[in-house]
Length: 332
Ligand code: AHG
Ligand code: MN
Ligand code: MN
Image (cartoon, rainbow, N blue to C red; front, side, top):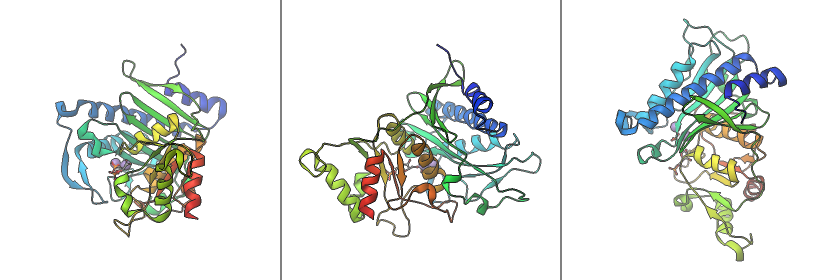
């Protein structure tokens, strides 16, 4: 079997299709290397005292897991010296991390959720890393938060790693979605699937049902109809899955279809949903659209939202096109 490593894939994309610049190629390789380091840290578990929480909270007021902090540091250290970035932003940092003066600066902005699904870490269930790449506006002397506030449609690259039974890296550069599996003996990511497509039709949905009483009417109506099964208005039985790691739930949808929802709800009226736009919803929406799926906040395409804050939250409906359109229509 001809094995295409991530390095070869990126070089060939650059050479034949001209879709990526060498700095972007470096960026992706560095992020992939950081994901390998995170996979190793996660894999040690209790042997290395990496499980459990820190005494710290992040900007969202969530208690940080030790591995949230470790993963964040791995990504920062890996990416600061290569000259490919102007700045980074993360779920775990209040403000952007501007590349220190001792290193050369590049033209990209990197955003990440260093460890997604971290409530699953202590119970040995899949977690992941999500990242998004934007172009830094030109002729900027000092990068500031507002330079990051670009609509998701402007992303030049997005991806995620899932640390599950195997470690996978899923990537889009705007021409399809490709999946690489970590070969632990070689230490490299190997292309195992190209041009992933999300089936348009599905019989599987993903939502945290415990929040049902807090949902808005369109979501209640949609879920009620799914639950009514074969004799209900949808005329078929639906299955449900909720891993509580967005990466794992989205990866299942990329593999066999489905709809993932984290709607806004009445628990904390000031917050429009739980998930963060810039480093969770945007990269996942880019990937899902590139795989033929759809992604909205209930009323509009997520990739069209003009961000106003780095850590802003958003309602998310993504996955198989027909279902996303169905629930979005109920909001309209
Ligand atoms: P994070 O661990 O980065 O804070 O993200 C967790 C997110 C997402 O991965 C998942 O879909 C959702 O939170 C789960 O939320 P509930 O615990 O409310 O089900
Ligand atoms: Mn997350
Ligand atoms: Mn996280």
